[in-house]
Amino acid sequence: MVIQDETLARDLGKRKSGDSLGVKQLAYLVMFCALIFAAAVTANSQDEETTRKLWDTAFINAPSKKPSPRKPSKRSYRVATPNVPTEGVNGETVVGVTLWRLRHATSTDSGERLIVHEDAGSAEWLPERISPNTKLDQGDRLRISVEAARTGYLYVIDREQYADGSLSEPYMIFPTKRTIGGNNQVTVGKIIELPAQDDRPPYFTVKRSRSDQVAEVLSVLISPVPLEGIEITDKAQKLSDAQVSKWEKSWGAQVGLLELEAGAGKSWSREEKEAGSGATRVLKSDAPAPQAIYYQPNTKSNEPILVKVRLRYGYSAKR
Image (cartoon, rainbow, N blue to C red; front, side, top):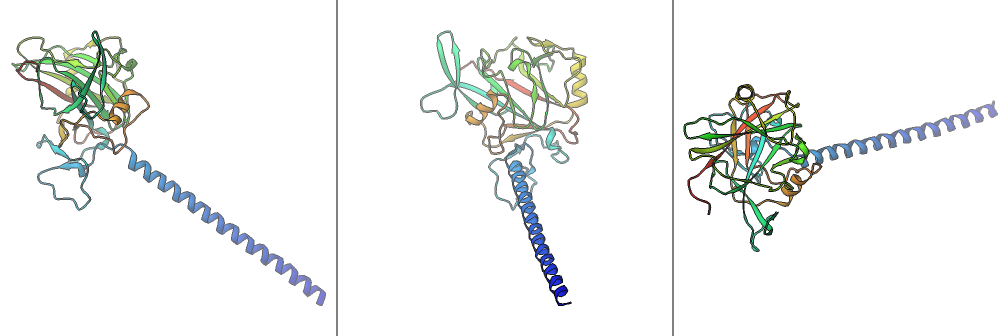
């Protein structure tokens, strides 16, 4: 009996030792899983902080808006269309547009240059932001950058507007195979520039086609899927008035505009230049924001949006 008791005691001791080891292993496993979960949460939080986000009501400086207790934002937008509410806007459906006017760069200028190869040699131009309401002079050199807040496809239609309000025939000027190979897919943080940096020339030149022309009207359309019946070719395509009118009625009603305060006059940044030069480069959350944001209340993520950008003509000759 004594021997049996001692044997039993040894067995019990082994079991207790094994049980203790199992508990420790379980504790280590729980701690390991907790560390992995914490790392995943941190990484996800960092991704959210760096992911580009165009729409945030905290950036909107509305007259009736109460001051926010949060730290002031680096960017602030003015509501240019007070009759179009900012409530009910799906942040994935907004469109960012920046107009750039080029001038000859000097040695004292800051900002990125656009190198243009001309007949007389190379010239350095400095792109500067302008307000959507800026009146353009004959001979102005202009570039346009478009940014979407979701994955989709970009189309740009151009029409001339005359003093009596009438419009010319519509032409789809983007996409074409001559600009970035016809790749019109957009995604968060990606900039599409018109013309592209490697186009020749990489800018539009403002020029009236007739004396009573008062503006150029660009219809910027972003669709979640490619538009049916549109084939990408080497040059701008003429569209029917009926087709464009249908798109405007279906996807372009009640569009509002926000304009970045203190943004006009700022030079092209390195981040913007790099994001516009390659398909794989995207802007992060702290990169310069678009000069104008167009929005449409109650538009769903699976619906196209069409906004009109008017390039207004002044009456003075080129400086």
